[in-house]
Image 1: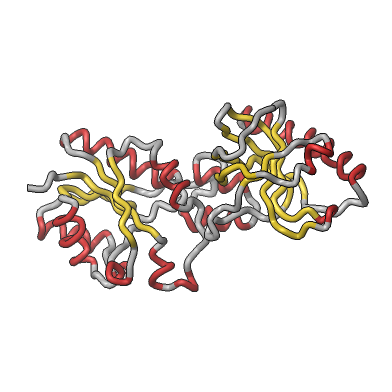
Image 2: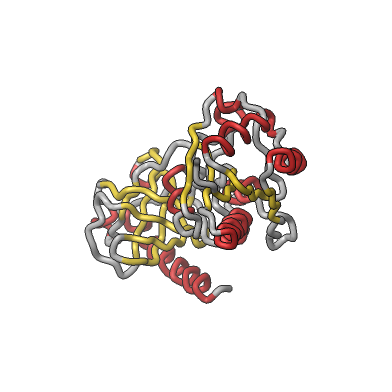
Length: 303
């Protein structure tokens, strides 16, 4: 007989404060009934299959989502390939064939606005009816309000990131918005300017990035956390139109080539600009550093 488990199901893009409430309650309930807790999620995002034109850019592509989920107390995660065949299952068949037969669901916890199955017809009412008929318990976790009083959601956070509202995004996420990647070799122009930088390889194509510009950031590296400033975008002073993610870390010296680094966006400092030459650029970088250090200090102090 398949081992029974307490499940939750969803895309969990962003692993935001609302998601984390679901995960915390999932882990708590599993302990109460002495069963394993299992999170069921999908790749790619379901809309990429059922309606590609409406598919959103993602807050946390697969690797970043895994990193965020690892901080929860859930026992295990099951990542289902979201295929046309899976999309064709109605809510009843998804529950019967996937959650009950394959995953041994004993109880199901979902967010208040949850929906799955063909056409997202498996809403809370449908799930409760199926639970009564199939003998599994359904618990609905209430919404988490943001600073504006509205429920936190991946959609509202995406809107905040796209608009450069990092404070609103961080409020919904419960942490700064971030991008992760592997440090690659650049053209070493920053070293020549006296502002040595690390270059982050291109993120997954569906990763949502904030608007181009210069940002105060924190970087989580293999050797610790450092404050810094980052240019997201081209380098017009040197005629380089390619978009890059390039950060100067404060009070840091190391070789991070080939290692994974997470960059947390703290505050937007200015637009990307073209300067008359290296001297004018260096002067502006000095001002950027001063502003970035102040912004990081304020963020650390919580105001």
